Length: 66
Image 1 (cartoon, rainbow, N blue to C red):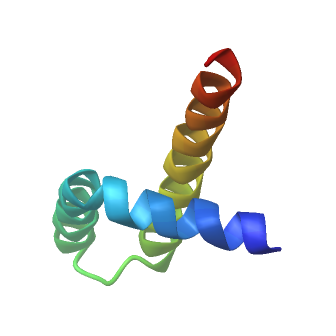
Image 2: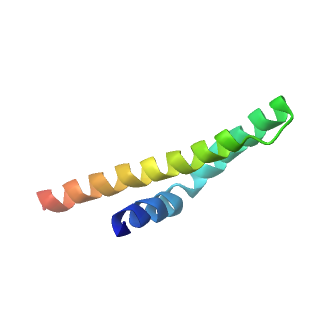
């Protein structure tokens, strides 16, 4: 469970700019639909977790190589 939290927060820290861009798209799509998009918000959190996981897995590979 702790590893999942690490992935989530690493995704939050390292991809703040990316999340702002994704958030902008969510707002844009939400405005086009003229309603707040909960699936879009959930998608942002899923993307954040996946980016964190990807970052952490590449970091672990680099540490193993050294």
